[in-house]
Image 1: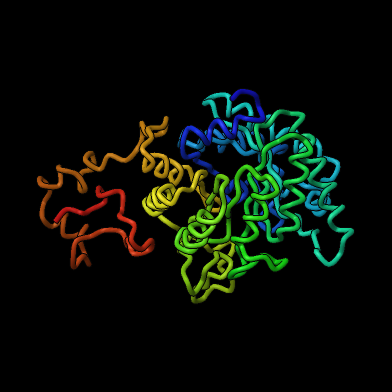
Image 2: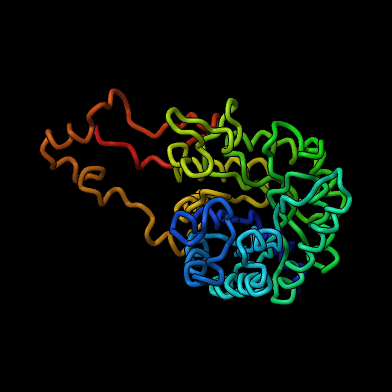
Length: 370
């Protein structure tokens, strides 16, 4: 198959597609996005910062460059006083993604997300959402994208609008749901049933993104994979959610008023945990394996390598054999130096690998010498 509209299908046919997102979180950490609004103003104000993050994800192995138009819809830009920049921001975001994608043969995805304007009890809001998606995706299609990612959908109804607008533009769509609530979308659909409905309406890929970490997303993804015939996507946040706190929003820590979104670091997944997630998801039959808010290029590279790939950034992958304490040279160190490094170790030292049960850790080099 050839042509822009079949590019996603072609890439999926070649094997697991590796995605990398979480742009607004990472750019906020770097000082280019304001937390709270999370509007990607950097697209216009600091385009080099956006280009650099695209390039870091590309070098780490991402197969898709996602145009940074998350929260770049009319409602959000109005909130921050930049509604007049709407078209320029959306067009520029696609151009930046295309520029970097061309450096490594990556696909380019347009992006729309939850709008906070949709209300299933108010029919007029569907028209508001449709208008916002139509202008965003119209500009993206005009600039040249391979497919649409309509993501972080709390409502099935809003997700269907994103899918319909994509189809009207002749673009394949990957439509993924947010899973803030335990079992159902905000408009009352079981997550698995919602994905079946999206697949039935012609989504090229369905699945989940954001909110849940690997441990609490995988069980849901396994059920979705069993029930739909189309490709499935899983893009969790790299945080250690669990049964008691299944989403990053529900994480709590002593002495912190609210962990989400600015105090999540103590719950961060290591690169090894994300690598193990990538393998586990692939083995479930997930076709599009990625990562969402909180992602860093080191996570993406570890995921790519766990999937058996050597990527440009692999040139600088860790080599602990070169370390003066963690490599063979440790044998020549004074025992007191080694003792200092090993203080508190009562047994074979490894990272805690209980986070993803029944998944064998993919790396061994972080063992400390005995």
